[in-house]
Each structure stands twice: as C-alpha cells, then as structure tokens.
Image: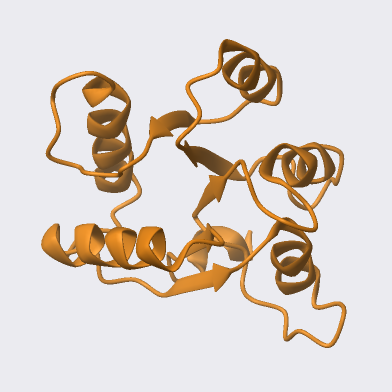
Length: 147
C-alpha cells in the first residue's frame, strides 16, 4: 500500500566511483530527478534496506541498479537474499555489470531481474546491448520517475 504512495527512488549498489558518477550523469541528462541512494556493496545495501548495522533505513526503492562484482557481498548474493525476503521479493532490479558472461546472465534471469545492462551505462547507446538500456529508459518512464 504505502510503497505505491511513497516517493519514487533508486538504490544504486555500486563500488566503482566512476560508474556511480556515470549513472548520476545519465540520470540528470534524462531529467530523472529522484532520490538516488548509493551503497558500495551488497552488505551495505541490505543494511540500508533493512535499517540494520547502524544504517538508517531508506524507503523501499522503485528501482535497484545492482552491480555484480563487488567486495563483501556481490550482486548475485544480494539478489538471492532479496528474492527470499517477502519484503523485497518484488523489487525491480536491473543488473549493471562489465561481465557479459552467459552464466551471470542466466543466474540473474533465474532470480527474476527486470533487466541486464552492460557497462558503461548510457541510455543513448542503441548498438550492442542497446535494447536493454532502452528498456531501462522505458521502465523509468513507466514508473514516472522522469520529470
């Protein structure tokens, strides 16, 4: 109930500062002006979502952008936990990764991801992988995250 009335937001789970800046730039460029919460690894993201480990709990995000390769808890480990938690099982999760490994893609599909985006992230690229990025932009439109 209240998740539908809550303000739209994005949780970016990413350990690379350049990738964080790239996402921020792309969101600004496309007038996506919603709160962007940033976690540096899966453990930090889980603490933010649950309000554990000394972290303040953030409102449930509309979209999670999740890197696969991170220290402490990687993206697939976090996704497995989220999919087994009744509070977060329905989260819209987009994988963002430099990995184009078929095993990673299949594992992400098994965990019901909303999309799989190969970095570097650009909402404008219509070459290889452009359909998933274009799908993400469409998804933002559907969630009315854009101004």
